[in-house]
Image (cartoon, rainbow, N blue to C red; front, side, top):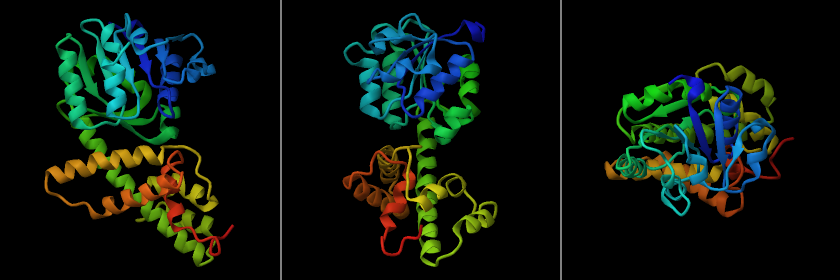
Length: 297
């Protein structure tokens, strides 16, 4: 089967799912699309795609079903709930799950689909909305090599790099490690920005000087300006990162491993979510250090 022959269903058109679907559409894939709110199905970038009322409709007569939804419950509902994709997935098709979920959920979904002769790979992504729009996401894969080989061309459209780590669930384990790193780097940038502002330093110049040195990070390069401005447009939701840190901390707890920095960041996120900031970008961690009398323009 050639790339142009692959028929794809996409369920979940949020901050990452929509640009992923747009890039697949531009690459010439035949897409059926569905999202819970239904609004994004008519995005200009999806002209030519077939909007669907249910996950089952999006999965019908598809070779590949790509999911990009919020959590374990959403994956279970989309696949196995009322009007779920499992009702119409055809034998020998493949589910590519780009959601960030627990490894246990990925393994359970894989086993249930295998009984239907449907393959499943967990393929969470990292790289933010910028990477999703540019098609440069990093894709972290767990699953059978044979299934990955069949969908490799699709993944290369949405990702700048595709990494296979082993059996189903291993992609989610690597994503948990990634989210721990994100927690530490964002929190460190937030504290550094707060200190620099309190010192009344020229922070644009400071960041320019430091971003390519030993302190450089993706968060410093891509999110420090949002922290300086105190404005946090959505890149990756704070509430979703909070959920992801729960997955990472559960994995660590099962191994009797403490992650004190991650635990602290998750507590800070919980406070911010309770204050109504859960739908902002993770860079909103900077809010935890706000002092209106000390903030600089």
